[in-house]
Amino acid sequence: METRKGSAWNHAEGTGRKAMTGSTAGRERKATAGRPNRWMRTTVAGLAVVAIAALAGCGAAGTTSGEGEGAVRVTTTIGQITDIVDHIGGEHVEVAGIMPPGVDPHLYKATQGDIAKFEDADIIFYNGLHLEGKMTEVFEEMAERKPTIAVGESVDPASLIVVSETDGAKEYDPHIWFDVSLWMKAAETVRDELSKLDPDNAAAYAANAEAYLAELEELHAYARERIAAIPEGQRVLVTAHDAFGYFGQAYGIEVRGLQGISTASEAGSKDVTDLRDFLVERKIKAVFVETSVSNRSIKAVIEGAKKLGHDIEEGGTLYSDAMGEEGTPEGTYVGMVRHNVDTIVNALQ
Image (tube, rainbow, N blue to C red; front, side, top):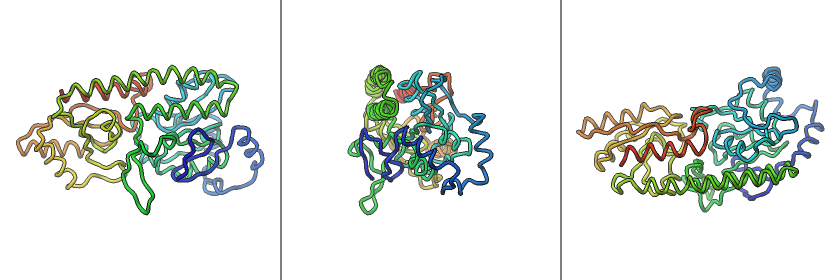
């Protein structure tokens, strides 16, 4: 994997294709107009729908700031990235996020409406590190025509959690937003790429980023202070899938997930039994469900522990791979993290 921080290179799921600037992408679009390519051949059946979706804007998961003419058109995947672009881009961007609240990005497949948004965008931001694993080919195709940036792959690999390694190729935990200090790197990448694409408004992007990064610094300190208030013996976070590894590493709490890093496969009976026995042995008093993951298996763990004489509470609902509804505090990145921290502390103290 080639990683060039601060460059216009795309890091789409293990590729190292050079992303084009806005002007170059525009020339490419003109040069390829009317000429079939591999992308078009694979989507012939849906071209009419895509065209309608592009014109009507149907199926939008979220369109926020920058409605004015001349705004940079940005398409994003997860809400956490949409929130970054909204804060840093301000009035100079028009941002469309394709994934609504409650959606699991591990399983998400791009719709024809999403493809229309990607086609219409001047720049695309996604997490990378295989979070949006079913959209890899989409990002590869888009990267040939416009800046397509995996913000997670701007983070120093030394700071990432390795979940597997085969023949020297490492797979990393993609849930970097749970360490606020790492998510600040993602925000810096958005600032730099917007400034590169739209240098006339670089000063505004820099000022907006400075204010947002200061807010994230405060959030990082808040999380550390609050988690430290939990008695050390009860400082164990048990969730439906292993999305909170960076959170545990950053804020000093042991993390156990019923499923692995991805939700693509169901938890097995042994996973349930092993977690049940761990909770009983450690006398953990609460486990947590997630908004984007089924709670069926976690409930099986709770029932299993109860049969062994250990009562476990459902400590509350956490936001993991998706944020809350638009217009709520949890519909912002800062509000989501604060909600999670407060829910965990209130249940485990």
